[in-house]
Length: 101
Length: 174
Image 1: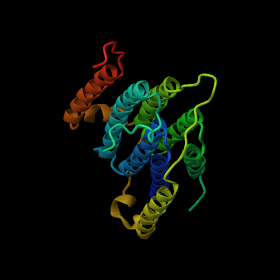
Image 2: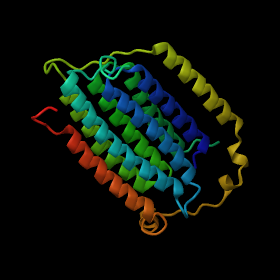
Image 3: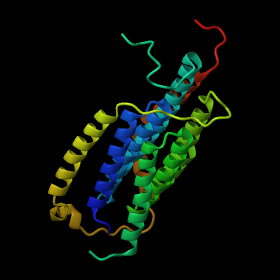
Image 4: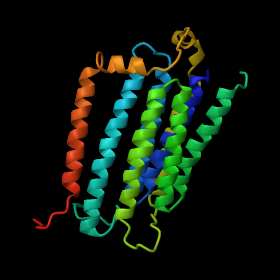
Protein backbone atom coordinates (compact mmCIF):
# COMPACT_ATOMS: atom_id res chain seq x y z
CA UNK A 1 0.00 0.00 0.00
CA UNK A 2 1.19 3.46 -0.89
CA UNK A 3 1.35 5.82 2.13
CA UNK A 4 -1.65 8.16 2.21
CA UNK A 5 0.65 11.19 2.58
CA UNK A 6 1.80 10.78 -1.03
CA UNK A 7 -1.74 11.20 -2.31
CA UNK A 8 -2.37 14.16 -0.03
CA UNK A 9 0.82 15.91 -1.19
CA UNK A 10 -0.11 15.35 -4.85
CA UNK A 11 -3.69 16.54 -4.30
CA UNK A 12 -2.48 19.70 -2.55
CA UNK A 13 -0.12 20.44 -5.45
CA UNK A 14 -2.89 19.91 -8.02
CA UNK A 15 -5.21 22.17 -6.03
CA UNK A 16 -2.62 24.95 -5.92
CA UNK A 17 -2.00 24.67 -9.67
CA UNK A 18 -5.74 24.87 -10.32
CA UNK A 19 -6.04 27.92 -8.07
CA UNK A 20 -3.20 29.65 -9.91
CA UNK A 21 -4.90 28.90 -13.25
CA UNK A 22 -8.22 30.33 -12.02
CA UNK A 23 -6.56 33.53 -10.83
CA UNK A 24 -4.16 34.20 -13.71
CA UNK A 25 -5.92 33.16 -16.92
CA UNK A 26 -8.10 35.58 -18.82
CA UNK A 27 -10.00 33.13 -21.02
CA UNK A 28 -13.20 31.88 -19.40
CA UNK A 29 -12.79 28.30 -20.66
CA UNK A 30 -9.30 27.99 -19.15
CA UNK A 31 -10.71 29.29 -15.86
CA UNK A 32 -13.28 26.46 -16.01
CA UNK A 33 -10.42 24.01 -16.56
CA UNK A 34 -8.77 25.33 -13.40
CA UNK A 35 -11.99 24.76 -11.46
CA UNK A 36 -12.14 21.16 -12.76
CA UNK A 37 -8.54 20.64 -11.64
CA UNK A 38 -9.36 21.86 -8.12
CA UNK A 39 -12.42 19.57 -7.95
CA UNK A 40 -10.26 16.63 -9.02
CA UNK A 41 -7.68 17.42 -6.35
CA UNK A 42 -10.40 17.36 -3.70
CA UNK A 43 -11.65 14.06 -5.16
CA UNK A 44 -8.20 12.47 -4.82
CA UNK A 45 -8.23 13.39 -1.13
CA UNK A 46 -11.70 11.88 -0.63
CA UNK A 47 -10.85 8.64 -2.42
CA UNK A 48 -7.52 8.22 -0.64
CA UNK A 49 -9.24 8.44 2.75
CA UNK A 50 -12.08 6.20 1.56
CA UNK A 51 -9.50 3.44 1.00
CA UNK A 52 -9.69 2.81 4.74
CA UNK A 53 -13.51 2.68 4.74
CA UNK A 54 -14.39 -0.34 2.60
CA UNK A 55 -17.75 -1.00 4.32
CA UNK A 56 -19.63 2.30 3.98
CA UNK A 57 -17.44 3.89 1.26
CA UNK A 58 -18.56 7.41 2.16
CA UNK A 59 -15.59 9.02 0.40
CA UNK A 60 -16.31 7.12 -2.81
CA UNK A 61 -19.89 8.32 -2.89
CA UNK A 62 -19.02 11.92 -2.11
CA UNK A 63 -16.41 11.83 -4.90
CA UNK A 64 -19.00 10.35 -7.26
CA UNK A 65 -21.52 13.09 -6.46
CA UNK A 66 -18.81 15.75 -6.85
CA UNK A 67 -18.14 14.33 -10.32
CA UNK A 68 -21.80 14.59 -11.32
CA UNK A 69 -22.04 18.16 -10.01
CA UNK A 70 -18.83 19.00 -11.91
CA UNK A 71 -20.41 17.66 -15.11
CA UNK A 72 -23.53 19.79 -14.55
CA UNK A 73 -21.38 22.82 -13.77
CA UNK A 74 -19.29 22.39 -16.91
CA UNK A 75 -22.39 22.04 -19.11
CA UNK A 76 -24.13 25.13 -17.70
CA UNK A 77 -20.87 27.12 -17.55
CA UNK A 78 -20.03 26.44 -21.17
CA UNK A 79 -23.58 27.30 -22.25
CA UNK A 80 -23.22 30.66 -20.49
CA UNK A 81 -19.78 31.20 -22.06
CA UNK A 82 -21.15 30.51 -25.54
CA UNK A 83 -24.06 32.91 -24.93
CA UNK A 84 -21.71 35.60 -23.59
CA UNK A 85 -19.46 35.09 -26.60
CA UNK A 86 -22.39 35.60 -28.98
CA UNK A 87 -23.23 38.88 -27.23
CA UNK A 88 -19.79 40.39 -26.53
CA UNK A 89 -17.83 38.65 -29.32
CA UNK A 90 -15.15 37.69 -26.82
CA UNK A 91 -14.56 35.16 -24.04
CA UNK A 92 -11.91 37.32 -22.37
CA UNK A 93 -13.05 37.91 -18.80
CA UNK A 94 -11.43 41.35 -18.62
CA UNK A 95 -13.41 42.66 -21.59
CA UNK A 96 -16.83 41.57 -20.30
CA UNK A 97 -17.47 44.70 -18.24
CA UNK A 98 -21.17 45.31 -18.72
CA UNK A 99 -22.10 44.50 -15.13
CA UNK A 100 -19.26 46.52 -13.60
CA UNK A 101 -20.73 48.98 -11.12
CA UNK B 1 9.94 1.86 2.71
CA UNK B 2 10.49 -0.75 0.06
CA UNK B 3 10.26 0.30 -3.55
CA UNK B 4 7.50 -1.81 -5.04
CA UNK B 5 5.66 -1.64 -8.35
CA UNK B 6 2.73 0.33 -6.90
CA UNK B 7 5.01 3.13 -5.72
CA UNK B 8 6.55 3.31 -9.20
CA UNK B 9 3.11 3.49 -10.84
CA UNK B 10 2.08 6.18 -8.37
CA UNK B 11 5.12 8.32 -9.14
CA UNK B 12 4.79 7.86 -12.91
CA UNK B 13 1.11 8.78 -13.13
CA UNK B 14 1.24 11.32 -10.33
CA UNK B 15 3.94 13.22 -12.18
CA UNK B 16 1.90 13.01 -15.41
CA UNK B 17 -1.08 14.50 -13.58
CA UNK B 18 1.00 17.27 -12.05
CA UNK B 19 2.87 18.08 -15.27
CA UNK B 20 -0.42 18.24 -17.16
CA UNK B 21 -1.75 20.77 -14.67
CA UNK B 22 1.45 22.83 -14.74
CA UNK B 23 1.36 22.84 -18.54
CA UNK B 24 -2.12 24.38 -18.48
CA UNK B 25 -0.72 27.06 -16.19
CA UNK B 26 2.16 27.96 -18.49
CA UNK B 27 0.76 27.48 -21.99
CA UNK B 28 -1.24 30.20 -23.70
CA UNK B 29 -2.80 27.94 -26.34
CA UNK B 30 -6.32 27.05 -25.17
CA UNK B 31 -6.67 23.86 -27.20
CA UNK B 32 -3.34 22.51 -25.92
CA UNK B 33 -4.51 23.30 -22.40
CA UNK B 34 -7.63 21.19 -23.04
CA UNK B 35 -5.61 18.21 -24.21
CA UNK B 36 -3.23 18.62 -21.29
CA UNK B 37 -6.25 18.49 -18.98
CA UNK B 38 -7.20 15.22 -20.72
CA UNK B 39 -3.78 13.74 -19.81
CA UNK B 40 -4.27 14.87 -16.21
CA UNK B 41 -7.72 13.26 -15.99
CA UNK B 42 -6.46 9.94 -17.39
CA UNK B 43 -3.56 9.90 -14.92
CA UNK B 44 -5.95 10.62 -12.05
CA UNK B 45 -8.08 7.65 -13.17
CA UNK B 46 -5.00 5.43 -12.77
CA UNK B 47 -4.45 6.87 -9.28
CA UNK B 48 -8.04 5.88 -8.39
CA UNK B 49 -7.25 2.33 -9.50
CA UNK B 50 -4.28 2.31 -7.13
CA UNK B 51 -6.68 3.24 -4.32
CA UNK B 52 -8.98 0.26 -5.02
CA UNK B 53 -11.66 2.53 -6.48
CA UNK B 54 -12.29 0.82 -9.80
CA UNK B 55 -15.82 2.16 -10.21
CA UNK B 56 -14.60 5.71 -9.70
CA UNK B 57 -11.77 5.18 -12.18
CA UNK B 58 -14.25 4.10 -14.85
CA UNK B 59 -16.53 7.02 -13.93
CA UNK B 60 -13.58 9.37 -14.23
CA UNK B 61 -12.86 8.04 -17.72
CA UNK B 62 -16.50 8.32 -18.81
CA UNK B 63 -17.46 11.63 -17.20
CA UNK B 64 -14.26 13.66 -17.31
CA UNK B 65 -12.28 12.28 -20.25
CA UNK B 66 -15.33 11.36 -22.30
CA UNK B 67 -17.81 14.06 -21.35
CA UNK B 68 -16.45 17.24 -19.84
CA UNK B 69 -13.34 17.38 -22.02
CA UNK B 70 -15.39 16.96 -25.20
CA UNK B 71 -17.75 19.74 -24.07
CA UNK B 72 -14.75 21.96 -23.30
CA UNK B 73 -13.15 21.36 -26.69
CA UNK B 74 -16.54 22.16 -28.28
CA UNK B 75 -16.59 25.36 -26.25
CA UNK B 76 -13.09 26.27 -27.40
CA UNK B 77 -14.10 25.77 -31.02
CA UNK B 78 -17.38 27.69 -30.65
CA UNK B 79 -15.66 30.74 -29.16
CA UNK B 80 -12.76 30.88 -31.62
CA UNK B 81 -13.18 33.99 -33.73
CA UNK B 82 -10.43 33.33 -36.27
CA UNK B 83 -10.83 29.90 -37.80
CA UNK B 84 -7.37 29.83 -39.33
CA UNK B 85 -5.58 30.87 -36.14
CA UNK B 86 -5.13 28.98 -32.89
CA UNK B 87 -6.85 30.43 -29.83
CA UNK B 88 -4.64 32.08 -27.23
CA UNK B 89 -5.28 33.34 -23.75
CA UNK B 90 -3.50 36.09 -21.87
CA UNK B 91 -2.59 36.18 -18.21
CA UNK B 92 -3.17 38.76 -15.54
CA UNK B 93 -2.90 39.05 -11.74
CA UNK B 94 0.41 37.17 -11.70
CA UNK B 95 1.75 38.60 -8.46
CA UNK B 96 -1.44 38.08 -6.38
CA UNK B 97 -1.67 34.53 -7.74
CA UNK B 98 1.94 33.82 -6.76
CA UNK B 99 1.47 35.24 -3.27
CA UNK B 100 -1.81 33.41 -2.68
CA UNK B 101 -0.51 30.10 -4.04
CA UNK B 102 2.71 30.22 -2.04
CA UNK B 103 0.85 31.23 1.13
CA UNK B 104 -1.82 28.57 0.79
CA UNK B 105 0.82 25.99 -0.18
CA UNK B 106 2.84 26.83 2.92
CA UNK B 107 -0.26 26.27 5.08
CA UNK B 108 -1.07 23.00 3.29
CA UNK B 109 2.39 21.48 3.42
CA UNK B 110 3.37 22.64 6.90
CA UNK B 111 0.19 21.15 8.33
CA UNK B 112 0.54 18.03 6.16
CA UNK B 113 4.09 17.26 7.28
CA UNK B 114 3.28 17.90 10.93
CA UNK B 115 0.68 15.15 10.93
CA UNK B 116 1.78 11.64 11.75
CA UNK B 117 -0.58 9.46 9.78
CA UNK B 118 1.03 6.15 10.68
CA UNK B 119 0.12 6.65 14.33
CA UNK B 120 -3.61 6.65 13.56
CA UNK B 121 -5.38 3.45 14.49
CA UNK B 122 -7.47 3.17 11.31
CA UNK B 123 -4.29 3.43 9.25
CA UNK B 124 -3.09 0.09 10.52
CA UNK B 125 -6.33 -1.90 10.43
CA UNK B 126 -6.47 -5.11 8.49
CA UNK B 127 -8.06 -4.47 5.12
CA UNK B 128 -9.17 -7.55 3.25
CA UNK B 129 -10.50 -5.94 0.11
CA UNK B 130 -10.58 -8.44 -2.70
CA UNK B 131 -11.91 -8.08 -6.18
CA UNK B 132 -14.15 -5.33 -7.43
CA UNK B 133 -16.07 -2.86 -5.28
CA UNK B 134 -18.82 -2.38 -7.87
CA UNK B 135 -21.26 -4.76 -6.16
CA UNK B 136 -20.86 -2.87 -2.89
CA UNK B 137 -21.31 0.45 -4.71
CA UNK B 138 -24.55 -0.72 -6.29
CA UNK B 139 -26.03 -2.06 -3.04
CA UNK B 140 -25.09 1.05 -1.07
CA UNK B 141 -26.30 3.44 -3.74
CA UNK B 142 -29.82 2.01 -3.59
CA UNK B 143 -29.90 1.62 0.20
CA UNK B 144 -27.81 4.02 2.29
CA UNK B 145 -27.32 6.74 -0.30
CA UNK B 146 -30.68 6.61 -2.08
CA UNK B 147 -31.68 10.19 -1.23
CA UNK B 148 -28.52 11.90 -2.57
CA UNK B 149 -28.65 9.57 -5.56
CA UNK B 150 -32.17 10.71 -6.47
CA UNK B 151 -31.36 14.36 -5.76
CA UNK B 152 -28.26 14.24 -7.95
CA UNK B 153 -30.33 12.71 -10.77
CA UNK B 154 -32.85 15.58 -10.56
CA UNK B 155 -30.01 18.12 -10.37
CA UNK B 156 -28.39 16.66 -13.49
CA UNK B 157 -31.68 16.79 -15.39
CA UNK B 158 -32.28 20.41 -14.36
CA UNK B 159 -28.72 21.40 -15.29
CA UNK B 160 -28.87 19.77 -18.71
CA UNK B 161 -32.27 21.24 -19.60
CA UNK B 162 -31.04 24.61 -18.33
CA UNK B 163 -27.86 24.39 -20.39
CA UNK B 164 -29.85 23.67 -23.55
CA UNK B 165 -32.23 26.55 -22.74
CA UNK B 166 -29.40 29.03 -22.07
CA UNK B 167 -27.39 28.12 -25.16
CA UNK B 168 -30.32 28.00 -27.58
CA UNK B 169 -30.50 30.32 -30.53
CA UNK B 170 -33.19 32.93 -29.96
CA UNK B 171 -34.28 34.97 -32.92
CA UNK B 172 -36.09 37.78 -31.12
CA UNK B 173 -33.68 39.53 -28.77
CA UNK B 174 -35.48 41.03 -25.79
